[in-house]
Length: 363
Ligand SMILES: Nc1ncnc2c1ncn2[C@@H]1O[C@H](COP(=O)(O)OP(=O)(O)O)[C@@H](O)[C@H]1O
Ligand code: SF4
Ligand SMILES: [Mg+2]
Image (cartoon, rainbow, N blue to C red):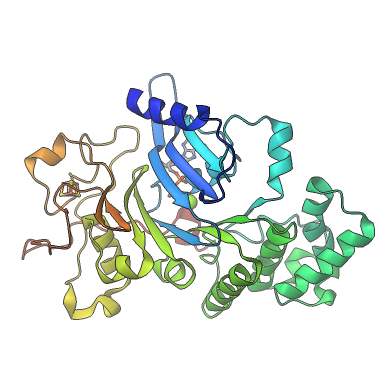
């Protein structure tokens, strides 16, 4: 804890001018704990480091409850972190007051999972998309109209849609409106929290394709939060895998799909991508349930579920360390490209919790 504070304080106090080579977003030692009562806290985000270079898309994947949404919300300061540092273009966000933060809001926006729930049912699409321009910019009425019309075209809807109410649109159209609203101020960063998981195929594929082309067209950076690995693979250059509040693996999308290194990533991929992983890897699942985030396991948090855990895993917390130039893993048994000796009798003893409550209830 004291080490983490030192890292965060160092990042805050450097006072250096913005570095043009700095990543758009730089997160260090980030924590967000929720107090349940006087004695119990959920460590939703518990010491996360990550970078999002300008113009790139980072996918954040993991089981439900691993802390992805909390991390995304902290990043935009929709909730305040408990500790740690978040820099946007080299500028520390956690120290900014409400006024300075408002000035930055137009440059960082969010798309939510539930398109209908995130759109005001009493407003027409025009007002919904116009709202961030009203709140966050000085654009006059004519300029706002011009920008709303332009943006609705970019998300491949027509001007006729601007007069409708959200309930008069399909799920895919509602999410296009959510994307238009997020991008109308032309932000540099967009956090997309499960942007397609409420949608059916092929609408899901259309929205992914739209997100990929908007990113290139506008030179955007994305943080794409998802349990849907196919979605992040389509849109993201890099992937970070989160488990119980921490990143356990981070690397280029291609490398991570071709050679998942951490046991948790291996299980996550084989749970969803069995046909693609094919004969190369047997179906690998983790035993047991996700432990309570109020009392996370000691040492490596995966140890009660990990098929290759050794005694030290109970004691020694794992840091993200490089296994290749651009690929980091938090596992003492993974130190390079050497294949892991998976136990031949590794059987699924439990299941990964990949969906969230909304999807499970079909809502
Ligand atoms: N406002 C809150 N109060 C208490 N616990 C919370 C709150 N928000 C999230 N949590 C808890 O933090 C953990 C991480 O949640 P979340 O960030 O939503 O995970 P994910 O998006 O990966 O499913 C979960 O255990 C969740 O119950
Ligand atoms: S450190 Fe140990 S328990 Fe954690 S993932 Fe590696 S082998 Fe498994
Ligand atoms: Mg979530």
